[in-house]
Length: 379
Image (cartoon, rainbow, N blue to C red):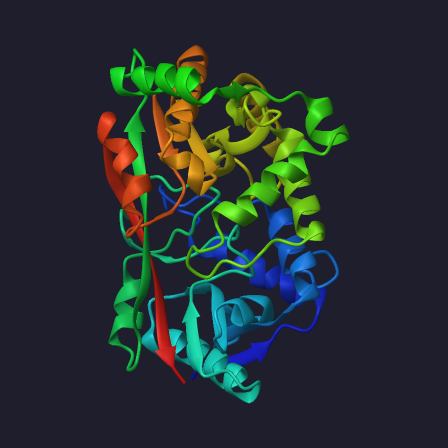
């Protein structure tokens, strides 16, 4: 028999986070997330998303042992933006027992219905920059700290449940870093510089942290991502957190801005990339920095001891996409990747219907190597 209990104490929240590490300890493709980061994201006092989100967490027990977990989330701003009444399920992990997975999702369904929701979707986080989707293809590919990894039985369980259907797919591309910048990007770069006076801008720390350029980047993200699946505008508090999580520790050579020289160097596009922490995180003790986890991460952060670079966020204002601003970003990043000796670039999730973004990869040796799916159910 499966027993579901709501997380009510800090000890239980630690158990909630710890369950993932225990479930995937011997898996060579899974990547442990940073323990302190997971705890902070789930903390009502530390995550600014709780200004407009409501959430509870649940653990499944069998014979006194934790066998599954799930978060039930309502993002009221997203529901208002998309005119929906959705409850999200996230942090959804379980042993290979249909009784466990069914009990967890039934708990989220009942929780959402009690609060007036009429649809359940997931896996989703609080906001779009959280991990989204269930892995349905690419189980033998190394994951990253920015995406969900799960066993192949996960989608098998949910697709056997009554009422669930596909809502959205994201795909991730793996591209070989070329030895020479492809002619397509080089020609586009020269053309847009000459015709539109668009320029690559490499930020300084002072610009980002003292002059507000970091906030400008994420305000641009609000504009460029506004019509993407499930997205809602980031608040100033959320942007502050993202600046602390990413910009403060970024290698600024791997952050690219595009500015319009005809409009007082207005920021019109950006890209944030990081060396892959996947193998370094696998060497930590369950995503903890101490006693030696910090050293493995530092070697990647400072000395780029990894062949893979992760493309986290890329955004270009719609009116500048047709002008080739994306080509400028790729031209600059490829040169930086070559300089650091990266061999492969691994993208973040991209909607499978976003043909404009996906078409960019045709000029590189690339392949779709992972797919994540969001499911929905009327409740």
